[in-house]
Image (cartoon, rainbow, N blue to C red; front, side, top):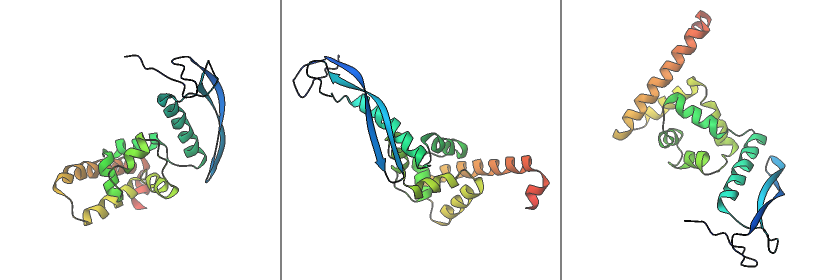
Length: 174
C-alpha cells in the first residue's frame, strides 16, 4: 500500500521535494546546529511532516546531544549487555530502575540524565558490575530472575579471570 503524504497547508498529495534545512538545538550542556533534509510541498512550499524522516533526524540529534554532554551511547549500553549477558529488563532491575528505562535509552531516543549515564558507564568495570550483582543478591531474588542472575554472575567472573590473566601477578597482589 502506497503511503500518501499530504500537505496540511494546501492539501496537495504526494508532491514534495527534500531541501536542506538547519535545525538549532540548545539545552543543558549542549548547543549545535544540525543540517537536515526536510520535505517541502512543491505546490505551496510548506514543510511536510513525515514520521520516518523526523525519527531519523531525532536519532541524529540524540546522538549529538549524547556526544556533547558525554552521555553513554546506545552502542555502549548494548556492549554492556553483551559483555555480561543481561537483558534490558534484568539490567534495569539490577540498577533499581523501571523495566522500560533501558529500552527507552536504546530504542526510543530518550537521552539518559548524567547520573544514569555515569552509573551505566561505571558498569564497564567488571568489579563495579560484580558489586551491583552482590547488592542485588542481598535483596530477594524472584524465582524467574535466578537464571538471568547466574548467567550475569558467570559472565562477570569470566571477565575478572581474563583481566587477571592479562595483568599478571601484580594484578592479583593489588
